[in-house]
Image (cartoon, rainbow, N blue to C red; front, side):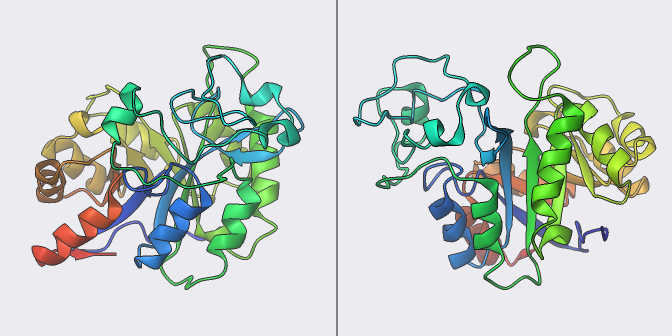
Length: 287
């Protein structure tokens, strides 16, 4: 695959986190379409596999009762329904177009729009949607969900990667993908398939200034650190190593401006339209 344009001098790249989670239900097709309607062509999303090995777009290893209803329209009370233990047909009986306003999640995203009849999409549905528009600046960050700390949540990393890459390769936008994961085993398996496939290394609560160099040694093209772990020093080290820095999850205006001032390449946010409007108001170039 071609190395993607992850940074541009004096520009910020806007990544819609799980589509546009602050405005529309996360990881739904409508949420990604909302991005494209607002001329935001870069998104971040999450991939898991069902029991029958269908790649689907969902962040949590289990169905989240805070925004999931059963076939009768009732909020889930069971918080241990694993994606990997359901076939896609079984998974499609659940609805994810609204949030329980009484939950912590619901209070955090109280202004999120309600959408009727939203189901967890297949990866292929997102790829089909994304293939229809302007492809010039299109970029999809596929975060492959995996963990070494709990079993029976996903197939083994090599199997998971093989299935997802094969699915993506069926589409003409296969060169518009960057793959990320907190589980670096996943990224190692991608490298085995093709070291030219762009890989981003996710970190959480890691302030080690050596991380950019470690990522470079692993063949990564980007570092995706948590907001609170970013320093100007590590941004400079990353750029010295030709590593792009895309920070997550940045939702407050002050933090957005601070990250831009620190020189990050991309901002992953639940409010991509808000960030776009902020950039335009402050004459900050974005892409």
